[in-house]
Length: 409
Ligand code: NAI
Image (cartoon, protein in one colour):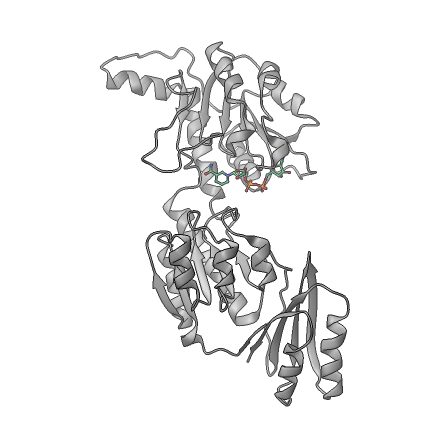
């Protein structure tokens, strides 16, 4: 059980690893927090030493937050993953310790869309192959097999954040957009909602994958699906590597079924820039291969820095957990002339009743209150009028199953 009673901001310690964008540093600096930055990831041993004193930890994809690290993180209030994925964190163990985890699921979506648009045009004009020829001195001036994207049918599989943005931009460029999603999605603009994957595959000139990485999407596009596509189709995958059967794609490119393709994500990707990239797709015609950089732009990094740091700021200042990955999501309006009490507890029946009994027995007026539970965690925010005896704070923190208790003035 930990208590943090209106902790002074200048004592809040932030550790930012892995070159997190300056936008995040600005936000924490503005709050008056103590900030330490380290450009690399730390290993488990180094992290255990560092994390003991830290209230806010910022990481990207390389730092592993294990249960062992968390056992030493007794002051840690929240972790910001300044990236999309959160696989590097023992999320459940964080929740059980009352540590909230935020990430940035949407901040780089525009970057992916822009790359997809650019690659689609490059592929339709066979620019990549022509450019390679130029570099070895070959002048191949011809209009053969070069087409505009205008008027062509773009098929988007997965109409989420990225797929739907791609739809709007492609339509503005004069394409006819078709999409297929397993969830019921509203068509934007004049996009046509396909009733089946098969309908999309057999209709479109360009097929672009934007599904999420759930296990059941493994080899979503394989031999059968390539056969269903139109001849000379353009195929793009900027979503997740395991979603495409690479062997089937190789066959489809070599047979000429797929006229051009761009692949940004692979079932196996090198762990670092020093490792060789091995793939059956190397050296195939009109094939653009990129090293998982769809979302990697300066703007996306700045957006991520801003988004995650703002989430953390709102949690520290107001107790908001809206958008948290591992926690009940609670957001209350700003509080005035009251104290806000944040109570994190194991999700067992009767905790709210016990908290409120303490307020009632002490004649304390509740101004606002919200409880939310998720899995085995409960989180209740209560705004109370400021004229109360501080003894009640001990009573509340001593309620059985309390994980963490914090007060905001
Ligand atoms: P999202 O979660 O907003 O959208 C995914 C959509 O796919 C959802 O609407 C879902 O219902 C749909 N879906 C899932 N399985 C499907 C299936 N079998 N058939 C049809 N629809 C299906 O995700 P978001 O943000 O749009 O990202 C899309 C993909 O792009 C994700 O896999 C993400 O990891 C990847 N991504 C890649 C980046 C890169 O650098 N190349 C950067 C950012 C995201």
